[in-house]
Length: 224
Image 1 (spheres, rainbow, N blue to C red):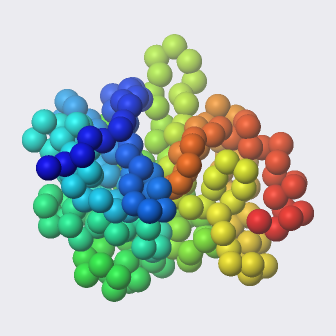
Image 2 (cartoon, one colour):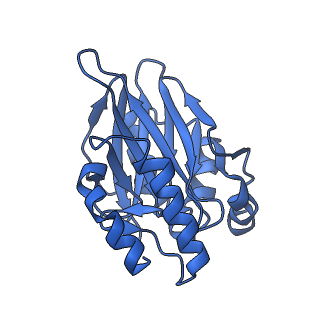
Image 3 (tube, rainbow, N blue to C red):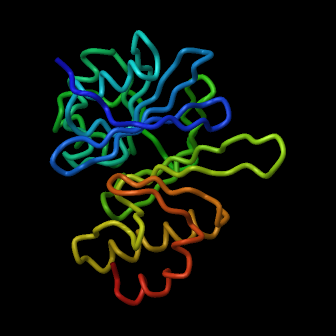
């Protein structure tokens, strides 16, 4: 018997967003659903495949999944990948430099490797790939632009473990890795997107770029 998934549904233009916190590392798994086209995309199946299957059914009554995006190679973001793919036959996509490690860890082939600037499209779900290197070599974030009729669009970023409230992700104390990740986060995220942009990390609560921007200098000085 499956447990209940604690979740809320947000409507982002034509797309519905749901999430579940799974596994001992409390990993955020995000489900994006196009209810009209009846298509779904899942970000980071970290653990608990039964709970993720229930999440899919909250999106669409018969479940179903078209694409799984793995933001990076670490086990707490792909623990349920093999089970989810076996149940749904979804295509797996991941950053190019992490793809082989993901397959080695799970036995699941990565169908499409992602590079900076690529677009992943599933029905009305359209995600731009932003490479944020340093936490792992192939870490990617995903930018969903929410279409609005009466105001500028709001961007939603799914950042895996590259960006959190209060700092960038772990770089293992390696100065070169930190420099790479910090540079990518500043140039590819903060310099590009406005303060209204929502950041949805791989663990913990969401934040906005406006809340985090004043801390950038402190992050650089402390080097984490």
